Amino acid sequence: MLKLHGNALDANIVVGSHQLLTVTRSSALGSSKKRRHAYLLDGIDVDIGYGCYLDFGGTHKASSHTEGYLNLPMEMGYLAEGDIISVEPSGHVNVVFRVNSPHNTILLTERCNHYCLMCSQPPKDVDDSWLMGEAMELLDLIPKETGNIGFSGGEPTLYGAQFIELISKAKKSLPNTAIDVLSNGRRFSDLEFTQSYAAINHPDCLLGIPIYSDDPVRHDYIVQSSGAFDETVRGILNLKKYNQKVEIRIVIHKQSIERLVQTCEFIARNLLFVDHVALMGLEMMGFTRANLDSLWVDPIEYKDVLSEAVAVLNAYGIRTSVYNHQLCLVNPDVLPNYVKSISDWKNEFVDECKSCQRKSECGGFFSSSKIHRYSDNISPFIS
Ligand code: SF4
Image (cartoon, rainbow, N blue to C red):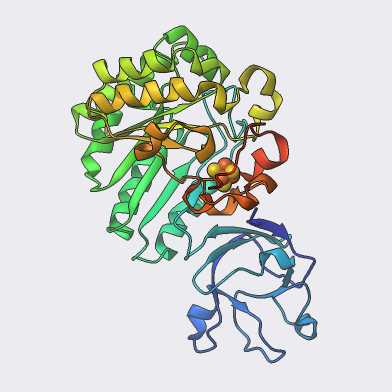
């Protein structure tokens, strides 16, 4: 797994508060630009005036007297020209944007009004509104040619009007960048809020909203919040009334698999106009690990149900994708909908895959699955 954050092994930092800096090797920047850049050290002679100076594993220790010197773990040595980092006064560094990655997701908050059994980012009741400030600032730094970025939480719409401002700013700052937002959709049950969102008229913003069951009681149980199903469905209806893009996301586990086919039938009959449905495998993070006994089911056990669910959605002409699954654990009839979806920084393969001849077509595993739990039925394709 790629290391996206880390503490400096030693540092000579003088910043008073955290700052966003663009990584560069260029020594030809003007003084005002230099302050907003982190310089990748490649020798002992450094030009002064940069926001900070990045070293990895102390290779350029001779520069450690330099104000702003930051010696990061070697595993972060992948940082490249154009990446964006957030540097805290303590010397903690978060990589918030990687220029060469198609999987840049910006965390907006850890607060949430759900408490999902399988939440990969367990909610925290903290004031983390600085994350919204950082996201606003980041939009000015991300290159204009970026194809796609994601916003996630927590629940981003808890910000209310500030969330609307963020999407508005994304449209202005990055007019050619597609946006994916992960939301539980409940805030959009408020028609006025939906109208404000629709009024932005973003050309390519997709809201990924979960419906875990056609049975409201079961959905509310999975998200641990009563009334969630009704508000989420009303939110989706409001969004489509204003022609906004919606993706329905269903995470497959022991609590959702029993009614997966009925849930897809419910979507086909009542929400036929959604733009995409994603049928997703479990990520072994956060609450999933704590609730593993009540969630884990080997994908090989549900592969026929998955085929049936995909067939229902395909039959109704709904664009459908199967995410986060291993190729050897799905039936061949699912392949037209199969997507290698796991973000590059947390995508790995296991030892059993070494001899597999179709590894390049396979989506592989979450790093967390490799560590905590994956199927006992991985079987390499060998001709
Ligand atoms: S053996 Fe590994 S690489 Fe091959 S299909 Fe299965 S999970 Fe994928």
